[in-house]
Length: 340
Image (cartoon, rainbow, N blue to C red):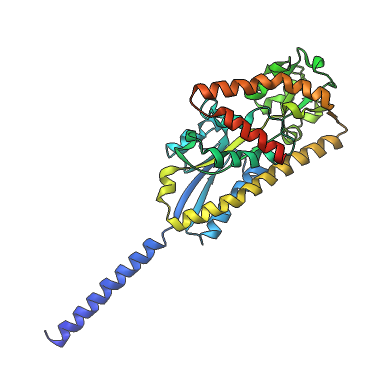
C-alpha cells in the first residue's frame, strides 16, 4: 500500500470515528421530555407550585429532562387523570382521589372525618400512610408524592351552636362530606364549588362544607357569615401526583434518584402550601367581619359520635375486599394523636 492510499485510509477512519463519537455524544445528551397534566390554572397557587417542581427537575438534571406542562384541564379532566396517566395520554398527572370513588378503597381512609386540626396534617398523614401500607391500588403507577388539605369547615348563613340547629338544613357537600352532612341531620346538595356562591345567594343551599381557603377564594364569605369549627367531624381531601410506570422505568437510574430525592423534599413544600392557603382564607374571612364559631368540647363530641358510623362502614367495606381497613384507620388515628 503506497503512502497516498495509507493517508486516505487514515482520513476516512478518523472521519468515521469522529462521526461515531458525535452520534454517541448527541445520544447521551438527548433531552428527555416529560408531559405533566393537571387541572389547576397555571397562575393559581397549585399551578405555580407544580411549575416550580418542573423547574427544579430541569435544574437538578442539568436540563437533561424537560417538563412540558399542561395546566387547567386542557388535556384531561380531574376524573380522567389517573387513567390518562396509565394509558400514556400524559406522563404525569395531578388530581384528587375522591374523583375516582371506589378506585382507591384503602386510601379513602384519608378523606374520612378523622378530626383533623392543623392545616398541614393531611399531607403529612397521607404520605406516612402510603409508606406504611404501599397500597396495591396504586401499583400501576409510580407515586411521586401525595398531599391533602383540610380540615373541612361548615360555612353557614346563620349561627350554628348545637347539633339540633342543623336539622333539615341544605348544605353543599358531596362524597364523604355529603355523608357527614347526612349523619349530622342535614341534607347534602351536590354541586361544583364554582356554583356554590350563586346557590347560597339564591337560597338554594344554606351552607357549604369545605376548607378555609376554598371559602375565601370562591368568595363564600360574602354569602355566609358564620364558620363552624367542628374538630370531631373534620375531614380531609387527598391528592395524588403520579407518573406512568413505563415512562418512569425508561428514565436513567441517576435521573430517577434525582426525582426521588426532590419528591421527598417536596412533601414539606406542598404541606406548607396548604398551610398558606387555609391560613390566608381564615384570616381573609375574619377580616370581612365574619364570625368563627368553635364548638365546645362536649358539643363537638356529640357531632363526632354522629359520624362514627362512617368510620365503621369504611372498615367493613375494606375488610370485605380483603383490605386492612382496620389497620389503616388505627394507623391514621394514632398518627393524629401524636402529630395533630
